Length: 347
Image: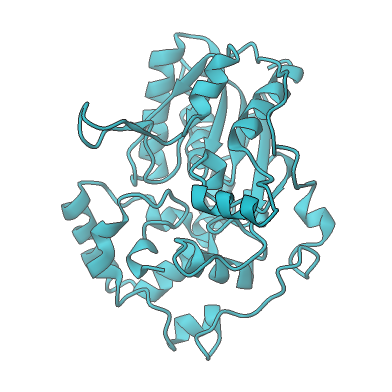
């Protein structure tokens, strides 16, 4: 793994990652320090916990329903919810990114997902919030985006990763008058924080954080409030106690896990091992345990954090087909099924 990716992929989309490579190369390389030993052991090698979902971290009841191939292919029929769907992106995300104006196609965070929902007659709203600002700032922008586009209609929010925290804060704390939320579905949201965020904060150390944050802001123009809010301590001791659920809103959640150690060039190789050694099964950035909030709908098996927004590695899927192992997850089918579930719930 390119170590410069680590600070950016803590519960994020691994985009724009080269910007911190020089600053983070020496900071985040696993080494035999007290911090590293807590996560890797003295040998600087990740603890070799069994990846069997039945290990001590993950009895079957812990995983909830294990979803293996329910979303491998599209069904012919899906119901449409009566209220618009808001798609809320995660850390370092965006609704649409134009890298070269009209010369190159735009990059969409929700790759093909918004179009698929729209083709099924769903009214879809995509919002953009500050990439790495604090939950409070992101939630305020989320509220403004929904209010401007929903025009007073009630909405169902589907949020990936940190987007779920933005939505929870907006619903619980901001309570915007012009936004009426009927349900929140979170997908791999770190509701209980991330061991990987803990590792990054510990390994960098408080004496080096200010200079690294300053460099991040100067290079990217983005704020840094999000990073320390993803730690387990912040989420369990600060955010969750102060952000109670709204009894008028339905809460659903999904988690995901990969079964094998990510390959050498995967952006999740380091993070997966750190999280697995302490929290157990995870999708490369968020553990199954941390993903659970409200009604837990199940754990997507063999799915990583980017597969969840249809940023799947096409080469990997092609190779699996050649090896006689067709993909068991189609992100489009997954989100159409969420819409179908919302419709059946009367939302």
